[in-house]
Length: 558
DNA sequence: GCAAGGTC
Image (cartoon, rainbow, N blue to C red):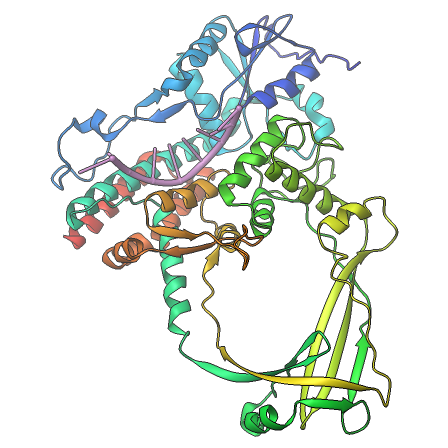
C-alpha cells in the first residue's frame, strides 16, 4: 500500500484542487495522493479534490463573434480581435461547470496539466473562465522521472515561473487563428471557390503536390537491364559503376545465353554467406513511428489511430500521443512531457479489434528487440553469364538466442524469409533463363501513408496528436486521394496505401502565392514562440506583426 | 463556409 503524500505549502491551505489535463493523469495523481473516485468525475481525499479537463475545453470564438455575420469579403480583412474570446465547447459544458463548482470551494489550485505550452493554456483558460482568483501552484515534471511524482508534489512551483509558456501557448492559438481565418476568407473570395488555408494543412498539401510533380517528371526516362533465373532465385545484372565504359550487349544476352550451365571456370558461380551483423536496437515507439509501421503492414492511418486510442483506454499501452523515444525511469537530463509508447500488460484484454491486436504485437516486437540482440544474416549469389555479372542478395533476421517469443517472430515473417542455401558444387549443371526488362529511372515515388507521416515528423509539420487528422482532412476536402491497394488476388493489401494530390489540390497550390504555400507561416510562428518563451517580446508585438503580414499578403494577391 | 491544438 502506497503512502499518501501530504502537500504542505507556506499557506495553510485546507482545500486543494488539483487540475489535470486528462482522466488518466487524474487517476495517477489520485493513487499517489490516496484519493478515491467519487461523483462528478472527481477524486476525493481529505482536503483534496482532483479533477481533470479533456484537453482544450474552450475554443477561440469564431470571426462572426467579432465582426458579425455576412458574406465573406475583403473589406473587413484582416480580422484582428481586440480582446480574444474563449468559448466553452458544447460537449464539455456540463463537466466544465462541475470543475467550476469545486474551484469555487478551493483555496489552493495545483495546476497539473501537461508541462508544455498547450497544457498551460488548457489549465489557465479553465481557471480564468471560472474567475478563480486564489493561489495557484504549478506541478511541472518530466514523464521520464516516474518515481519522482511524490517529490515534485512537495516541490510545487510558483505559477509565475511558467508564465512565459502560457503566453507562448496563447500566441500559438492566436496566430493560427489569424492565419487560418483571414487567409481562408481572403483566398476563398479571390479564387471564387472554397480555399481552406492554414499553417499546417497548406504546407502539407504543398509538400504532397511538389513531390507528385517531381515524381511524374522523371517517369519518361528509362534503361534496360537483364535478369537471370537460377532455380527459383532471380539474379539482377550488376550495372557497371561507369556506364560509359561498359555497354551491355543485351541482344547477345537475350538471344544466346539461356541454357544449361556448368559451374566451372567458364561459368563462375559463387554463393556466399556474409558476416552476421548485429542490428542496432530499435528506438522505442513514438506515435508517428508506430502508426507508420502499422500502415506498412496494411492498417490505414485513421484505423491505426483509433486502435491505438482503444489500446490506451483499455490499459494495454501507455499514453500514445508522444514524440519521445525515451523509456520511463531513464535517469537522464532529458525532459519529456510523455515517455515513449510501452505495453502496460502482457496480454490484450478480450474483445480487441484485429487492428488493435496487430498494433499491440508491433509494440511487443519492438520491446523484444530492445531487450535482445537482433542478428542480420545475408547471403549473396553471383553468376557470370556472357561476361556480365548477375547477383542476388538476400538477408534475414534472427535473435541472438532461442527466445520464448519465437512464435511472435514467426508471425512477423522475420524467420519466414530464411531459405536453405542451394550451393552448386564445381561441375554441377543448372538451367539459366535470361530476361530483359525495361526499367524506369526513379519510379514515381508517391507518398504512402507511412512515408507521409514520417516526412511530417521530420519536417516538423503538425504534432503527434494532430498529424493523422491533418492528412484525413485533406482527403475529406478532396485535395488528396487515397489509393486503396489490393494485392493481385484482390485481397486487402498488406502494404501502406498511396496518397496523391488531386487536380483540385494541385490547382489550389498553383494559384496560391509562395508565402502561403511554403514555410513562411511556420517560420513566423516559431520565431514568435522563441521570443515569447525567452520573455523577449510580448503578445501584442506578434499579433501586430502577423496583422501587417496578412494585410500585405492579401494586398499583393488582389 | 474559415485553423491548430488538446482530449475521448
